[in-house]
Image (cartoon, rainbow, N blue to C red):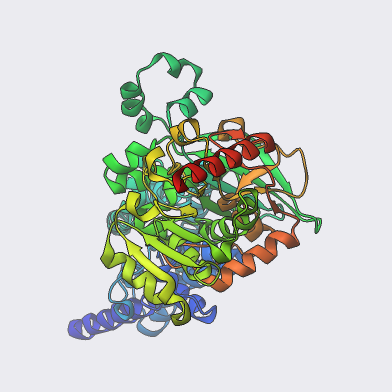
Length: 575
């Protein structure tokens, strides 16, 4: 008889575990043609399903996970006539099945919803209202923490922590109260990565979908002057002290928010968030520390309601060109590089005209040609110029770029690993590196050359335009938005109604409702570059007609003077 009872309990536990191993989150994501384990946090629970697939899918997953905890207790009690304690053990088996599912190589969820289902199953099966009161108290405890923090994991951890105490308060069986400590420990241990993020202040805020379109763009200071513009007292500090202190400063929201309107009538709100890191930090700090800092900035944007985000300047270069940050983010991200390529290429023809240059007869050099922007520029510009020079640090990285260029144009393309040598004969230079410091200096450029500096931080040293009055250097990738007098935060140093192309890509993705189509990683689809250019025109954005460099507008008089000096210098060389 005893052996029979033990066998029945064993069968009940196995049934509970196997049912708990069914991943409803995985099934729902499969129906949506997504893999939930590779999106958002990678968790199969309702919270991640809601973030990735929407609130409706998350609610369905929530109720199915609760049902998962409820049903095994009801069924096994009905079949085997098990006791309260034995039924709770079946519930625990279901919880362990959810956390360590045999069907997903033991990589499961965190069992908060399933635990709620177990409690409701105990209340229903044994007709004990005390279990239901425990459920209501836990729900209230969860809700209080969630309303205050908007962090689901914090609420779940707190509810798990107080679970045994509510069982004790309502005088439920002592054995079940003791066993509940195991459940609490399991749930908290399953949240250990969340606890680390809560401590580091990088844990995600839960965001309900809003009708109002909100985006967040991450920037960072380029030099001490940018820091001083935000923190006036920093002017008295040495650069070394600023470098030492900045990583300890949390990300800052740059006010006011910017409202961008399209000529279609649509609009979005964009917040700019400053990750308080200088270019030197991207080189000197461990990459994981930099990634954590950028993630904190993204979380600030989430808390402001952002449903998509952009990675600006050097934040777009870390973690495999943004892939790692995008994987950990709860909102889709873009580096904006597709639009940056479009803007750089679109700006070349009008700028070349100012120095009487024709692209079809010009030698053009791309500095940083092995990077994502450089590769795309090379594929498009190879057909537009007489000669193309790919300039980069490594020949091994440049050769695959050459292979991506259409065979008909490869005979006009050469490779150079020395920047000075590579650009010394170029009529037009497009510089797109991710270097923390300048890479182009006054003696690198021939008279009459034009340099389109797309990089942030700038690739061209400030002294080039000061020392060389026979060349033209301008910052590529600056757009004017449709509605005039839109002011960006002053610390960005951009004129009224002007924004960088990487920012404009975020605006367009939000306006079009295609936030998930952003640019992430090294590969840029050339077809998407042309599509992005068409979308900028659709929404009334245009390349800024005013050329700028080092935060100042280059007047037509200055450009004409530089052209005249260039012609004079060429004549002197010829003679």
